[in-house]
Length: 119
Length: 119
DNA sequence: CTCATTACTTACATTTTTGTCAGTACTGGA
DNA sequence: TCCAGTACTGACAAAAATGTAAGTAATGAG
Image (cartoon, rainbow over all chains, first blue to last red):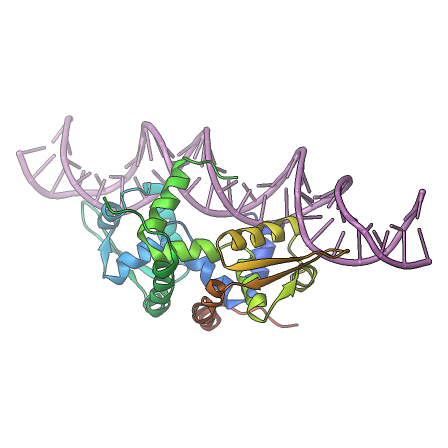
């Protein structure tokens, strides 16, 4: 998915190495990652529950974002040897440690963003 | 640059309307925005100074990111009627209000990221 | 044997972001 | 007239992110 040595990738890596902010933002910056993390802060969730609670993601993308969060050590994927399959996702301790930060980010946004009109 | 009604764009807008976190992350999430904001937290900077302090950005992208930050109300663009031209960028009060949040994001990243080896 | 259930994959297409490189506009001074 | 200096802009190209639609694997219930 990523070329190894495009200027784009090199720049990304360079910035992240220099700047904690860029690193953090890359981890939580995917389209659906904030939503997923927010859900998981409420506790462990099955794949199907996540899917239901975020109806506009396609499965492909949901899985993709979950895999990245897992690779980055923010969530755990718990597979139960059952049929039909059961897979649960939960925050790692590293993921949990995001909580205060996510709260601050959320608060800033809620103060400054234009709101959706509730119907 | 953006189609108005691609699923992609609609999803972005929907999420942002529902979730302060997604809104905030979209504002500060561009490749060079954290770096630019970090610079500007140190004070007003001329275009040429920004360019010099971030040597790997191309001018086109630098300008693009500055324009977006401006559109989103985080920075001001001050144009002096001089020749050769002089343009300075500074944080708005809204931009300044990001400071504690950026600090938290930066700190989290610095604790958790793998470091660049200093040469 | 067939079906329902769950958690995915795969192939492909579209949209968005980022980057390259060359050029422009202005004007005061040599 | 020609050039230096500053802050851009434009045409084009590559890479990355996101989305669509259809299919797969396993197995216990009926």
